[in-house]
Image (spheres, helix red, strand yellow):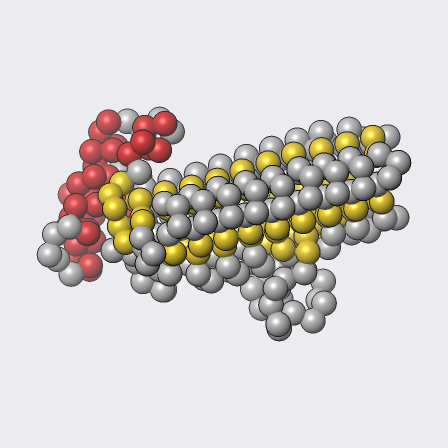
Amino acid sequence: MARIHPTAIVAEGARLHETVEVGPYAIIGPHVTIGEGTTVGAHAVIEGDTTIGRRNRIFQLAAVGGQPQDLKYKGQRTRLEIGDENTIREFATVHVGTEEGGGVTRIGNRCLLMAYSHVAHDVQLGNGVILANAASLAGHVIVEDFAIFGGLSAAHQFVRVGRHAFISGKTGVGMDVPPYCTVTGHHAELAGLNTVGLTRHGFSEESIRRIKHAYRTLFRMKLGLREAISRVRAEAGDDPHVEHMLRFIEGSERGVTR
């Protein structure tokens, strides 16, 4: 049976794996499912139609599965899905989705949400994403694997952030951030590639060289974007990392940070 502190409140209907630990004064709602080895800290609140996977650590005073901060939301049954081995720190907030946004907010595996970070309704986080202290994602934001948000950064609703991108602290993101890139500034501007992150994640020197060449062609040469994409695709051959970058840019609806 799950180890539940006697002061915690676990509603009837909640489903907790027998290895789950729930700390003092935590509150868990009736539509919550929590998987193997997950710990819930003191005074944390987990509510809504929320499914949490294995070996997550939810620290004290986190608020998970709350209603969206969306005036159109009228109590519809929407969901939050959290994968495995995530860490959600103190005062972080994560909300369920909205019907208009697809009905579900998702967090992948092995993400780190630091203190006071915010994941709004219908956000889709990939694996290994890091939100530093007080980083905030508005509704419908899509973040690919291993992207990092610095402290006090923020992303406008419907923004897309590519894999291995790095958002500097205090940066405001209003347009899509291409994969592998670093952005900085009150209104985000490109500041180069996240080569440190690529190296840490095992990208070969040749792959990084090709990504650098693509970056220079796309964003530093005086070419139209379509012409630049065509040139990069012709020169890069079948490099999967470069092709992902190009497809991300071609799929942008808000425009790409430059």
